[in-house]
Image (tube, rainbow, N blue to C red; front, side, top):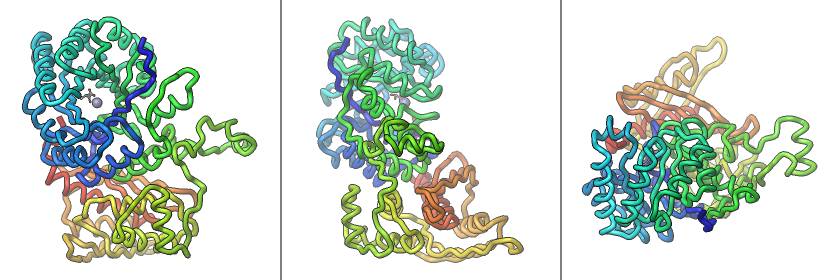
Amino acid sequence: MNSNKRIIIFDTTLRDGEQSPGVSLNVEEKLQIGRQLKKLNVDVIEAGFPVASPGDFESVKRIARELRGLQVAALARANEKDIDTAWEAIKEGENPRIHTFIATSDIHLQYKLKKTREQVLDMARAAVRHAAKYTGNVEFSAEDASRSDLDFLCKVFETVIDAGATTVNFPDTVGYAVPHDFGRMIRYVVEHTSNIHKAILSVHCHNDLGLATANVLTALEQGARQVECTVNGIGERAGNAAMEEVVMAIRTRQDVLPFDTAISSQHIMAASRLVSMLTGMVVQANKAIVGDNAFAHESGIHQDGVLKERTTYEIIDPKDIGLSKGTLVLGKHSGRHALKAKLEEIGYKLSDEEIDRVFLRFKSLADKKKEVYPEDVEALVAEEVLRIPDRYRLVYLHVAGGSGIRPTATVIIEIDGKEVDGVSLGAGPIDAAYKAVAKLVKTESHLLRFAVNSITGGTDAQGEVAVRLEEGSYVVTGHGTDPDIITASVRAYLNALNRLEHMKENAPQKKC
Ligand code: KIV
Ligand code: ZN
């Protein structure tokens, strides 16, 4: 049994997380998330898959160059071209890691790779040897490990450790594992891989059966010491193990999970909001740790209990994850100076020009909303500062609706810096506004999903709208906030249209 209790947090929000359907982040957005991951103090950031596209390559390179004091990893299939490209992207990092992988399950060998076990073993060995010529920090992943023959898997791990792998990763690629059986498999690997003590054993669990976090925790009990996870649990299909769940489970249940991470948990909420905002993936209200309802007490008995003693119904102090609900930050009379101070307090050091932009939006928000909370300010920063320079930008919106009136929208938007205007009727005011925008930008996309949420409580709360658009094989999400729900809806639509443009230009073959 591994007596070292320190768990390495390997964050793959920017790689596996970005493989969530409809998500495409640009370089600036990835850097913003990377900086927040650094504040969280993750050990490793998997910044992307450099060979997948020039955009991926560029963002991995920028992240490796800028983010110091942590390891930056790049993904590569088990071939020289992928590995050379990955190294080219990360070589300026402080402690760069090449993460190479190949599938080991018979089902992948037979149908996907059309290779024998011997061939896969040779490819894995050759890939790790090649990567180890560049760096002593090499991770090898056995894709679909949880459906692989365990003796073959142990042989692969033994071979790659001999070839220079310093971390070996056991992915439950399709989220097929259940905790007690996953624990048994991890124990088997620990007991039957003769040189396993020379490497860190890692796990990477997908959430197809809703068991990712449970599987991770079981694996730690059996000797795994690295967890691959994402903020909000985003990722391929049903996503990955959520970092906030793993970290807070360990912190909360030290009695049965006596492990430790280096995560500064007070930055969890800000990371969750940032990732949600930039990916357009809204966090479900009942999501553990970071969902809107995670600390809401509806029943009178519960409210009474919490008022008497918080721990009656709260197992985590909301402050520990940086949840500041109920803390008034600013009001309508607050000036630019106060806004700047508050921004710094919640972790944003902005340039004068960026503060000016946020201040303009803040003033207009404070006119409509009596109390402005930290989460409101974060939403403004995400919209005004952290986004790509948009091709389409909302300048003016007027809608007329109500009973007995045919809903009409007048919209002015800026397209590549030039203002254009349009009017449209619709089934309702949002429909009218969307039709007006669609005509102006001549989009061929279809709306797949439209969801509204409120950032804080109260009827004056900012509305948060998420939309999903489809055009041909492209699917994108968009996100918008405003106290006026129709304005928030148009912002979300324009954000999705901007992302669609960006995806068409940059990610013709992003995924592998
Ligand atoms: O799910 C998976 O198997 C992966 C590997 C590339 C680690 O994402
Ligand atoms: Zn994965």
